[in-house]
Structures are given as C-alpha cells and as structure tokens.
Length: 280
Image 1 (cartoon, one colour):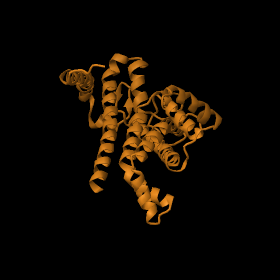
Image 2: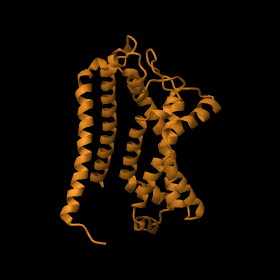
Image 3: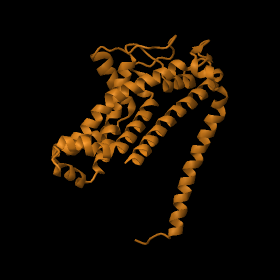
Image 4: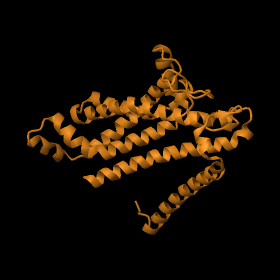
C-alpha cells in the first residue's frame, strides 16, 4: 500500500482539527453571547418566579450538586473496587472476559434505558419514589461502566515490576495494591472519575423518569423529594414552556451555567492530575 505524502497527512490532520475547533468555537460563541447578559448574582442566588419567566436558577444548581454527590458516593467506591478485583485478583478466564465485555457493552447503552431501569428498580420496586436519591442511584449505575473501565486502564499502566518490588520487600498483595499500585494509578483514576461525573451532571434522560421536576417552590433539600436540575430545567425551558420566546434568554443563561459547571469539573480533574504528578 502506497504511503501518503507526510505534508498531505499533516494537512488532513490540521484540516480536521481546525474544522472541529471551528464548530466548537461557533457553539461557544453562541452560548456565551446570548447567555452572558443574563448572568448575575441574582440569577445564580435566587429561585425562579413569575411562572419561570423571571428570577434565577438556584434550586436547579443545588439539585445538580446533590445529584452529582449521590452519584459519586454510589458509583466511585464500587467502580474502583470492581476494577481492582478484575485487574489485580481475577484470573484471565472466559468468565472475566465475559464480564469485561459486558461492562464495555453497558457503556454504550443509551442513557434513556438507564432512566427506565431506574424507574422500575428504584422508584417502583424499592419504593423510593421519584426523588433525588432515585435519580442519583440511576446516574450511579450509568457511571459505573465508565469508572470501571477508566480505573482498570489506569491500573494496567502500572508496570508489573512495581508490584514485584513491593512483594519482594515483604508486602502482601493487598498492601502492594493499597500502598503502591493505587497511589501510582491515582491520577488516571481521578481523571476518569471526574470526567465521568461531569458527564453524569449533564444527563437529562436518566433523571426524567426518576425525580426531576420542572418547578419546586423553594427547591428541595431532602433525599426523598423531587428536585430541580440544570439539564432538565434547560430542556423544559427550551421545549415545553408556554412562553418559549420569553424564557429563551433564561435558557441560554442556564446552558452557560451548566457549561461552566462541567468546565470546572474537568478543570478539577486536570488540576488533580497535574498536582499529583508534581508530588511524585
């Protein structure tokens, strides 16, 4: 097979990169130019009023934070422990290969399926009702495959000689994993966890059936109550409100706030990774 000219290959890569950056810039410009005039302290510190046509989005921000915390508490410990078992303890058999294949297939399941599953399991079967707890557990299930996969990949990057050195000085397998392997893989694990949580924070379909509400006076501070969330709030303002044109500036402001939240979550992942590498 004849190779392409290196200059031509470079041009193709540059063109593809430039195209992606161009459309990304157009989207960001549209969101910032239309959402920035709406942003103010009152917008992020007060609740909606006058039929959602005025006021702010504080209950939606608070609900999104609660939802993300519940997702993290449920998915992160289970996901990391599962990855540690598969990579460090489980033998390479047809069963472990089947489990890994199943986990990767679950990563590709549409989020709306998780929403229906959460409705059947947490809301109906377990009697939790439509609540922030049901929604958080549903997002936790959605996040588990990603956390398991990224954690296992981070563990695989640790050389076998590192484990052998720890065992050679008398450490048990558990001690070598706890004191040597996990700290070495921590940057990759944390990056995968934070990026997964930032994705979960922007999901709409899984919380649609499990607890998200269009409007709750005064917000919700209890795990067994419905809640407002930024992605669902944005969806309702953009498609279901009786005065879509009137609330469109609020929708753009909500989208910009959600974008900023996700950006800072991603920035946190990069900072943790950078900080840990400098401390090594």
